[in-house]
Length: 79
Ligand code: FES
Image (cartoon, rainbow, N blue to C red; front, side, top):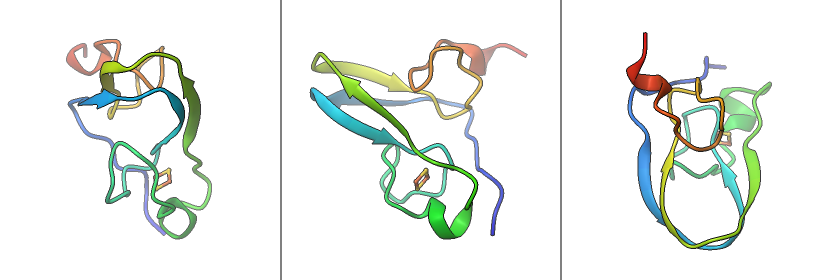
C-alpha cells in the first residue's frame, strides 16, 4: 500500500464530453484518468467521477489542493 502521489503541475488535456473518472491517488499509468490501480496502491482513495459537459482544453489538478477539483485553480503555484 502506498500514499497518494501528488505532482506540482496540472495535466493539460483535450477533453471530450461524457462521464470521466479522474485519478486521485496519482498511481495510475493513464493519468489523469483512473486505471484501477488505487484498489491495490491506495485502498482508501477513489477516483473523482464527473460528467464533462463541453469538449476542450482542460487542466486537471495533480496537486489535489484545488478548490475546484478535478480542475486546476492555480493552487499548485501558491505556497
Ligand atoms: S488509479 Fe488513482 S484513483 Fe484510481
